[in-house]
Image 1 (cartoon, rainbow, N blue to C red):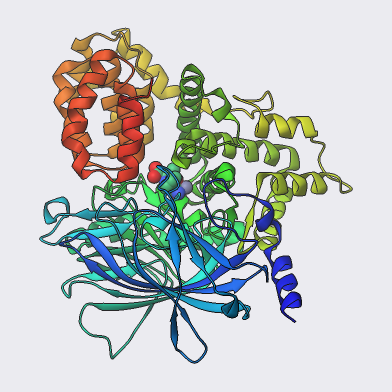
Image 2 (spheres, rainbow, N blue to C red):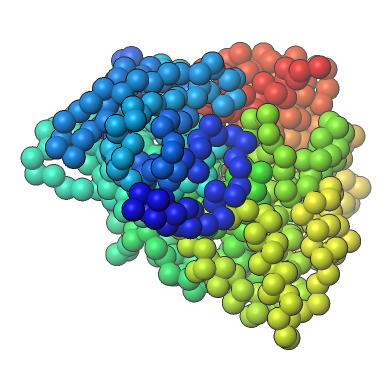
Length: 622
Ligand code: BES
Ligand code: ZN
């Protein structure tokens, strides 16, 4: 009987088990964590989470007698096996040596007597380190009110720093949680809220019924208010930001409907957005049911909502069909960026989508050049090899924009209706499963072998997946959308248009970005000075315009505006903004020195993964 159950479990594993994850100690061929019940108290003084995680574990290999979990900085107090009777039996465990990237292997031993049941409950009593990589604890001064704030960031391999777990994107589990927070604060999670009349003040309960990988388990605690924006959608924010957030996100119901029309039913019941404090590490993080989103997207004119469209699109690509390992990261981000552009086109028109597409393309070309110059040409393949490295090093425009362009190429050969049908079938067939690049490739080739399929050769496909740079089958980039901006820019530089006469009244923020991005490094400082005073360019206002302006300031060595570079970097913790500017600073010696000076001040406000990313740039290992 035992054997039969084990065999059934093996088949249920499908493609997942086949993909060895180089970033996890987990041994899914032996045991699988199916459910996690968290019971945690958030201690804002000590900056720790403390309590228990009860794992429901399925025995896959009947011979296995050790359960291996990931952990990083966790202080494990006890491990118990909870018997059917409810009795707890102490289990021995050991922690391996700390690995700077992977953390410590947590091995739990089963005495022979206890390995008889196919499913068992293991309770781990623990607390997190006060420097847990997933957690960011913010002082009231870092929020927009008088209260502190904390949140978790699981992606890529940080979940293990707050939960002892099989931390691999190919392993899915459901979860429930009881969180104790200071009574004045509210907790939200990537799960359904469970109303509990018997709950004491400050106690919050959650339930996630859909199986997800550990990196999508998420928690945030702060002074939060909620505003519904439709039956299934709404926004959470600190009270002082709620009205502006609700205005900015008024299109949320339409976004969700458009997503469903393109990618199939929304399978997570609700979709809410949580507007984070400025220190939040990302533009957005696709935690299921509730995307965590940077306040830098609130521009006042809804011009930056494509970030929300992106996180919503992850409800299909990433959260429903998940990259099996971080080497397959493009399956998450490339598919999502492709969907994002398609949805933006439907929601905001072709022109807006083309502008964002053209801007992304210029970024991609720069990224490829930078990676090649750094001797990292192999990181420009879609399929990555990040074994032995921090998987966040794979987070570049390659996964996002080369990935999206690969799908754009496939779309051009299939024709849009056929490709859309292929995508929908893909999401349906692999819902709540993980996917490797190789399995996707196999599926694509099988589709291409069917009668009436478009002609695409294996070589053409593999040139995208396994070769550096951009292949010859790249589809045309709609740079023409910026023709009038480019003309105005050229005339302005040639002195044919005065600064005050630039036709900026007609420009959307994306056109401003193009205008600033296209300015050469040798433009006279007097012209920059005029631009700055005429249009009040600086560290504030639309975050993407500010970013492009400050990039121009660094590129041209326009020192009068350097204090704005510093102010901007002290005011945001958002990866793309922070990393872009530090990368630009690191291009020169003087810039590196300035960057180090800024970083010394900004570091306490940055999330651990952003610190790592900045340090890789300004303190490179020679
Ligand atoms: N999942 C990513 C954020 C992420 C990537 C977290 C890698 C940890 C490791 C998220 O969906 C994302 O891509 N965010 C972007 C915004 C998007 C519009 C490109 C960001 O934060 O800039
Ligand atoms: Zn993304």
